[in-house]
Length: 535
Image (cartoon, rainbow, N blue to C red):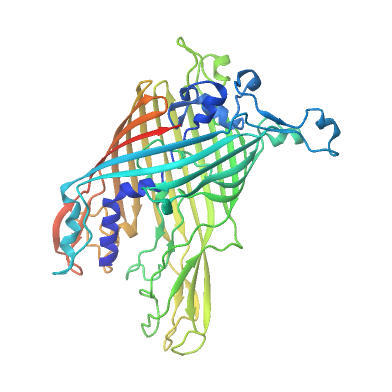
């Protein structure tokens, strides 16, 4: 537990490095070249989309109306239109963009951490040297390449890849990569845009995107894994599920409706992404003799597909009926975003897999492999209210993991079966407000909140009035509250400077196994500045 607490404090203090690996904020300047228009046509503060940008995305990266009249670089036709009349005796004609739709993005960061950032060293044994967190850091972020467009016939594509992260090519990797077949419902005589198919690797249809977030720091609830707390009050919790909603899914997604008004639904079937680092023994496994031997491994179960669903409705609140039903509202200075209220819900259902060395007889050598498949779900609701230059939005999430515990009978060294235990749960969410002071300047205020027993065990969010974070006292959940004010400036439509000040959750350091605090409760607050461009 001591080592876990040290690692957790370090991770919180070095949160900026994790940001580089979890926040892909992409705009598509290739579309500006293709249509001869500014990034601000689709973006408020890139990559935040305005209503026209949402309609452009829904239409398969095309203008929602009269696309051919606006495009400045015509696509290359892959066949003659007359071939449609000869199909299936010839290939159906398609197209590719007239110019390679390639974009690049780079960002860099500067961080200042509070003076008490190394307080966790107080619990180290004399003569032990722990990790050191510097006061200030310069750090490169992503260098990324991305491409997107339309192949004709309503077939859109997207691929993005991080060539390097934090200056290291080995840290890079594939982000989203998919084909999207838009408005398939037309073949079934369904209403327009009621059925679309996406195939590949992609971010789930979350209420608010993490992969293309414009904030410097990620949403804490999206990055929350579920780790069971083992102690006498919960002796049978044995959950170590690394799944988070921040990660991409691999599979297929059916969706319909629009992001800029009316209903929106999505149903995804994806492979599991629940691998994690297991414990090396069985802590507090219920047994007749107290045996705690053996090893456990966690990995994805490719024979089971996880399910995700989302349903939302956006009410456009413009008084003028004509304006209310258009892609954008009308105003004295031209088109603008609607005044709207969106209400939605979402649900994820999956299972995490754990295997344990076991034996069917009393032996010191494991003879079988026990496999447990623990079902879990994540569910929540969300809202988004926009009035002219003010946008207020947020969501709530509840996480629940069933618990199946290795059981060691009396006289046995290894478990011979699994039994049901107490489920592991967490909850939380965030609320954020954005205000556009000028077309080039946006202020931000966000409150993140996560409640998790595992955090309490690691001394996150605790205080002097609560029991110390030892394995013997954990009756309460811990609450992590983070407040993050920020401001962003568009130097040009494709160059942005950002600043955040993160008021981090309170942490405590106890003398292990005692109620003695080694240092007063503290926060490792950080100030982060970022500069980025897309090309």
